[in-house]
Length: 147
Length: 143
Image 1 (cartoon, one colour):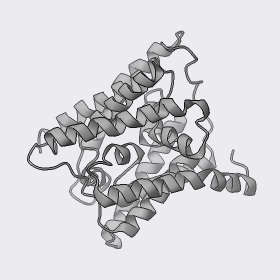
Image 2 (cartoon, rainbow over the protein chains, first blue to last red; image 1 turned 90 degrees about the vertical axis):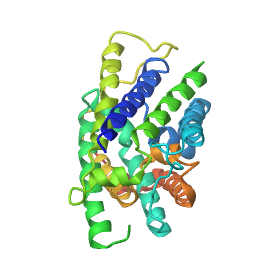
Image 3 (spheres, rainbow over the protein chains, first blue to last red; image 1 turned 180 degrees about the horizontal axis):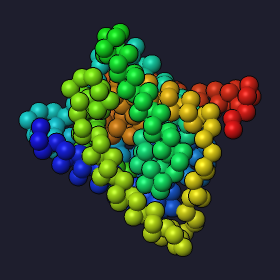
């Protein structure tokens, strides 16, 4: 357990470096919901290819890491341990898809990229989704027992 | 070139999510769950990611992106209903299953049926979002 925060910090730095490359080279904000959502709703326009390549990297590298090493501890296959309640998964997916596009950002766009430029919107969005997430865990896990 | 650096950026993002354990929903829900066995990992991930991005934003001042074009405009300071409502909806979904957009894609290969269903539902939500947003703005314009 002690070493997990080091992996967290190291992984975080990699995420930040990804965001820095996207910003300094391509001139864009690395927000996962915007990159994906723009392709789905057509608002990406002529950036479609660029975004598709981003998603290819985002999916491809962890896939290769999971095939080569399994999970982080290297003692089994990589897993998400997500709930097997598919109704909860569908509701959560819809909420995440709709919410991030209405708010125009998620953990990467508002959180990582917004807070680091001291954007008030990024900070406020982050406070709201963290507080709602905390209430969500209390409600769905502890009170309703769905997950 | 743009596509190559997009893929590199996405790859770094994906590697970071994998290494940090952010595709493990127990860690995400564990961080959000202040009444359970609290897991501090997510705070280290956020902190680690913000450090390089902070310097990247500083570097943009008075410069241009390496491959041309313009840097994003200054952040909009207005806090509107859509930002608050959307982030709240997103947070509930995030707390419910422990996945947000980046990690849901990063873990698609090993996320099982739940992972695939989540990404499909998220995609459907993103497809419906513009019409929901238009209705919201029609009922009462967002500030």
